[in-house]
Length: 147
Image 1 (cartoon, rainbow, N blue to C red):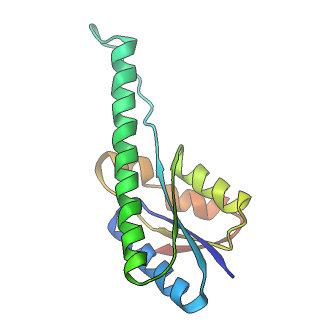
Image 2: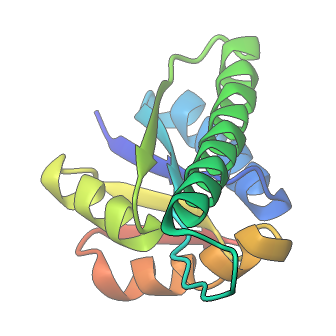
């Protein structure tokens, strides 16, 4: 059975990647794992009246928001697969998205990675904008990039 890792951030292209993975799962009886990675955004602030504790709280809040967004994307993916009666595994990770996706794909011997070509805009877009490119150039397994 083919093992497929699908990355999602809830973006339009990630949703297309999920749809493609669902088709493969149905056709190949593949084992699908959907991953979403929350990245802690590094902060460097220096301003009168802002303490290290303030910065730490802000970073913690940002990470919690990123985790919440990632979990929402996973919940949506899980619902999509369940509606079609296809089993799916989901996992939420924290770290650099490209590095985490590459590490998981290689350490867990996935046969293929499916990823959208572009992520969400705004802050998430800055964080995830080059993820697909980094994964394509780093992972040693097959990668399908969905536009």
